[in-house]
Structures are given as structure tokens and as C-alpha cells.
Image (cartoon, rainbow, N blue to C red):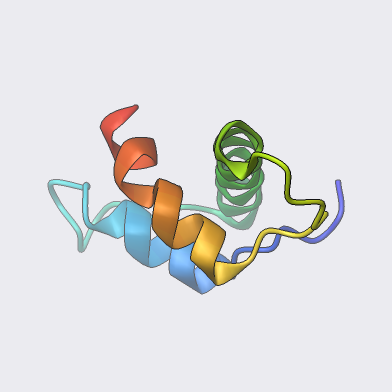
Length: 75
């Protein structure tokens, strides 16, 4: 597993929004790496569905902005 394209601090802040007790609930480094990898896979999958005929192998900010609302609804 390579370095995920999402910063671990960003993933941690995203997860913290959904914890009931934000002070006591923590994520260890491995959990953050796994969640970042899952986010990468979800975004890449949604990007592939919405990409159409583009041939860019990387996920750009615009791609993420287009699919983020649908990605959040999938949860």
C-alpha cells in the first residue's frame, strides 16, 4: 500500500466529525492509513464512473468536487 493521496490529518478530522465523544475517541495510525486507502478506492471508483472519455490517470480536485456529494450519500 503506497502513501494514500489523502493527508492523514484530513482523514482524522473527517472521522472526528462523526464521533460522539470527540475527546475520548482516537484513531491510531494504521486505522487512519486504512481509512485513507478506502477513501482513495471509493473516490477512484466514483471517478471512473463519472470520468467518461477523459484519460487522466490521477484524481484532480475537480473530480473530487464533482463526486463528493454522491460519495457522501453512499454512506
